Image 1 (cartoon, rainbow, N blue to C red):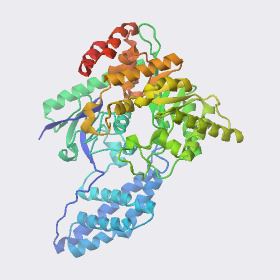
Image 2: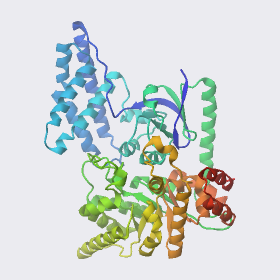
Image 3: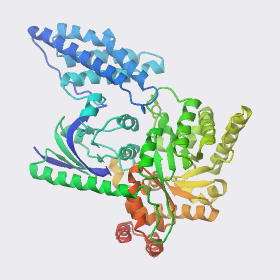
Image 4: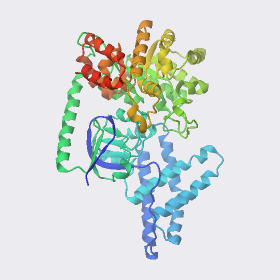
Length: 575
């Protein structure tokens, strides 16, 4: 049966392929009795699933991609060890034989027994390993139930039209997906600017969130169309619809090819205004995309992604090598490294939210100031790397001058420690601040006096200005970059930076949204930083723009009191 679902589009393009269901929560395990004569067959089915899963893990262990987190191999070793333990690989067979239950249910019972034992362990680290048991059991259950498993090398290499269907995907999940070649993904929950959505865009594949019931309504291997531009999913399309979308898909790909011609073209408007187009990255391996799209610098290196998907923290040497590699591979172009922006929905392995409102809690610079040793290690690594390229340091989520002064004190301490060890670094390394909460925007004139540059993080600035949790799809419709309050804060920040004579950029999703390019140019912005995949479309818009013609229309937008009229003004601006 064909049906259509509507969600929130987060990454454009059209994908046509078969669904691969992903489950991280809840094990939907069937339970039924078996006859005595069926016991040998059920035991054999269980053994086959164990061996199949074991082989799958070993293959994955031998095929770890170069850009995988450093401890990914240890993570797989642990899962192999759990699966090989008789308490999981042998004990369920007794239940099959004595209780005459199906293999799935026998395994589920044994898992529950093991989890209860883990709950009795006092050591926090060991107690948290029950999550690994659940993940291993889930793999075996998928094998028993005939479902494809997500992290299967064979799947990635042979089925590049596969479309992930999940209830939700964490930023950590998304980082692991970077090693696969999926055509698209859709989820039940999520907002257009959640970190998961941002990372999805970094994969440069069609993606839709907030579909609400996709995970339960779509079945494994069903043919689906994902229209990432319109936020539409069509399940089991008829021949006419399928043919229409195949044509649209070809046209989309043709347009992408044409844009590549702009790679080496300078980003200059019709009136000769020079614009800097930089790229946002998560890991050093993203440099390839940066160069392929002609970025003239790294405007935002989200360093916290070096800390995700692993048990331990990267030490100073590991961080230094990562930062140095990016600096050297950019060959003298600027590289802006944002210090740790952990907290909220980006958590270290095993960390749980203890705050009722993590987005308002101990995150970003607040966390770093509360954990000075953690911060000191990163500061030394960034400073050391500054000797090998044109590195800048960006402090996230500043809210007061007191925080900035504490940060300067810790930077000075890190410099002093390096000098005492005769380790070279750039003593004039520029330090900038992210303007991403209303307090910081309203105090931009103060920050501009003390910093070398400003960077406006529009995702969080909109979230905090409008009091909208950007990970909550139930309020996603209230997220509005054109809200008068947001535009006033962005405009004021740009003016303060200009007055102080320091550079200012926008590194949030607004920078990569081609509909906003002329508006930001009209507000005075001359430096954009975005995911590399958006860079050429934004450049194309800049090349078609005459800045002096924007001022009157943009001023009219700034004076508008009715948010609903903003979209009409924006349409005229882009006409």
